Image (tube, rainbow, N blue to C red; front, side):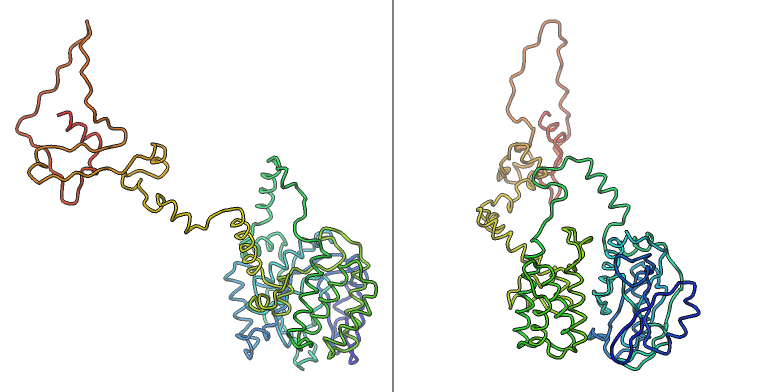
Length: 465
């Protein structure tokens, strides 16, 4: 693809074998290249093969990296990649305003596109600290050719580091998922096999979609976008105008009652984003109309329209959770804020059904705080299993009496009542009691030792004596 001075683009598709002879002519212009192969124009239905995973690092948007040389950022990025256990990228390019990390992979067929898109989304989430662009998840993404000039900053695009190796996709994807704390493909297969062997319950049927319908959810996102525009004084800040207008047009494609999509987008652009050029607005409208006419599907992976989560929209527009709570946004907030709101709704629902808070429950059930099973030397389950015996009663004795007599102690399973002796039966041998040892005194407890610490067998033996 070539970008001329009038901000107009035109694309050409060449055979891979002829690229070494043609690419030299594209170095004198603002040239780009797609890393994935296509049959003709770059479109979803003409995808031929997937050849790479990539991350676009706009580190100049991160305050901690502003003003740092690209070489220093590249060194820190490679160290982070090595620490996470991911193979080093095949190419690490300085694009003039950021970095482009590219992992070349063995060719994948087009039907693997949903899995490829999920992997590249996880890969981008691993490098948020370097300003990874979450919009760089489409297979038709183009990258600047090394050796060309970036007209936005006047710097040359060049290669900084790279192994130039082509990696197996399955091995690379497993390393990415392990680094993100997610299961690998083989682990997912084993979980599916284990889940398929179980009988599904009636309340959670397999294949049931969760959450709001797409039209209703994007209607709420559209409301949040308008609330943000009002918060910004009616004008979207520079740097977010193109993204905001693209998201607004995407919301219109998900709703079925929008007749004049082009007219609505142009009206909104003139009010909220007056600084955008006409060519940029036309490109957003053209993309939205193309997405709207694509076939619909309930599964976002095969749906022709774009699907953004509320967390992704909040990240693209740099909306903090504090602002989302202040404006009472319905969908545009991070996953952490979503977890907090779900927890609050669940807590309110439990209180409505009469469930007490933990502090009030413990105040009413003091047995959990007293832990009487510890005094018996038992576990909690064993103490309940034995019928919740009461705490042992301690008796006061003077030191002289303690050396001559033994107090009975309530031990679980011990019998302290005197049993009457049975008369000897005819023909049965008479057992004579063992002789009482002479010259032996009862062993006194050691300092810090109580009778409860004595073993059951030893105490019973002394009682027999």
